[in-house]
Length: 123
Length: 187
Image 1 (cartoon, helix red, strand yellow):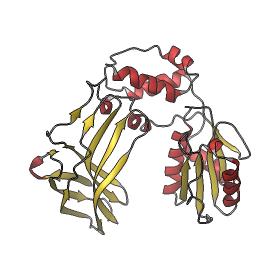
Image 2 (cartoon, rainbow over the protein chains, first blue to last red):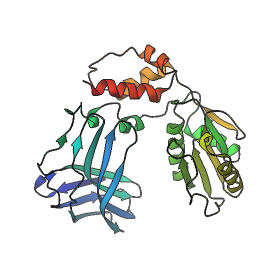
Image 3 (tube, rainbow over the protein chains, first blue to last red):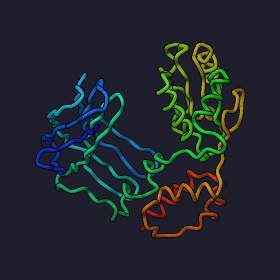
């Protein structure tokens, strides 16, 4: 049975800017994959055009039919996770197995307060 | 309401499946093949041309085509400098979303390049020299169907008059969805 999941150490989902994010990706593929890519990225969600940036990435070639691999990323100082009425910025750790493509994501919060910055109250 | 929770956010709209009338992806691609891999998706603003092109593009890539894609919009009205820097080969399909916005000189370059490419697929507001592969259109029924999908499982906190919205924006569903985004965002 195929599966792909991202697990963050200690089950953490909130991080401070500049901190370290550690976790592991666990997979069982239906067919032998060519690559396994683990990315740290942010993307926007809301009204109009979306934006995204991959901040860091680890690529494994010929990862094997199943496995368990640790990863770590140094988190940048910005941008912070935030939500307004028009736009939200979200951070995720994303694992992608190819081919065939399987994707697993784990959302995190990146902010000095440990909480998403709420801008919905702003005019 | 936070942007990420708004059911009319761009990500949610991009997840909507294209609603065909009298065709499907495979019959459309069969038709494209019959026409020498040259065709145009035609329709007014906000009628789903880009959504359909995305769907066809993905299927063509899975079928082994090397798709060279470019989207025109108000911010980008010319082909990127490197788009045709390398002559396209027979295994490559040129896809242009919004060919109407291209200036004449870029159209000439594109026409020349398409002679060596395996095919050319475009979106346009009106038919032109390329055969019309599919004509996109909208209706009030389609609008209700799409909103039903977007709001599935959610309690609707407001009840906009969809018929009036549809008429107000002349059937442009993109504009209707932006209006609904703003409406939901105020809740």
